[in-house]
Length: 84
Image (cartoon, rainbow, N blue to C red):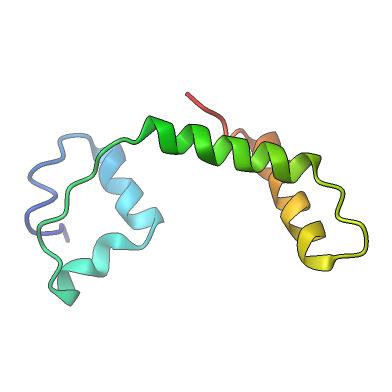
């Protein structure tokens, strides 16, 4: 099931898969039917910088910071937070 006003604008099925990954396929049911997807390279760079900071973080005894650090390490190791 495609999203009205979106699926017809996106020729790359890989981008359609991104809607599924992020749970955006249900937005049309909420009345959000004119959605467009754009690449934001500067956002990817900012996200990568956050993961680098998280991975370098010394969390000490703070469990929330420790979890953030672990996520940063995991994301960078998986390549998901890399800048293309």
